[in-house]
Every structure is written in C-alpha cells, then in structure tokens.
Length: 85
Image (cartoon, rainbow, N blue to C red; front, side, top):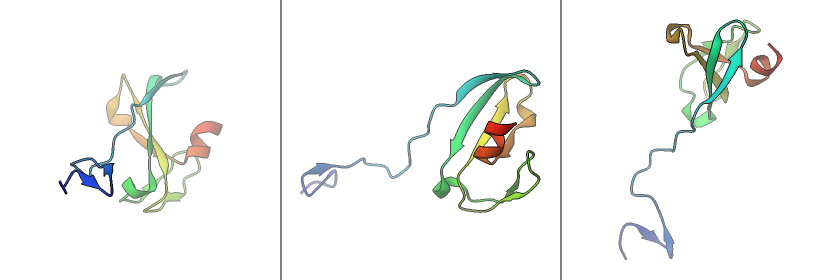
C-alpha cells in the first residue's frame, strides 16, 4: 500500500492545515480590514483582545484582523468582540 493511501482513502502528503482566505471587510475606522479565523490548534500564543482587554488563552479560536493600510496594527480579537465592535 502506498503512503498516500490508507484504508482505501487518499490522504494528503503533507500534514500542514489549509489556510482560509481572509475575508476583506470595510471598517469605518481602519478602511479595508482582512479578517482571518485562527483555529484552536493554531492558537499557540496568548494575546490580549483590544475589544474587552481580556486574554485570549492558548488553544482558543479567535480572529486576526489586519488593516490593509496599516498592517502593523494587526490585532487578535475574540470572535464575539470583533462582531460586537
């Protein structure tokens, strides 16, 4: 049996997860903002959410928001905080 087949199912040769394309939205304050979801298995660092000023712990899914005009203002938000902003 080849390494690409396991019990009759085709598996990917690499184990790296597929990245989601960022959703570009218009925000009145920052202009166009790219928003990407971070899955729990990708969340390897702790961040502070700018919406509620609480920590986003390691292993918690959240969103990363990057303004197109100012990528240095990239921030990690709780998904609910970003939707309520």
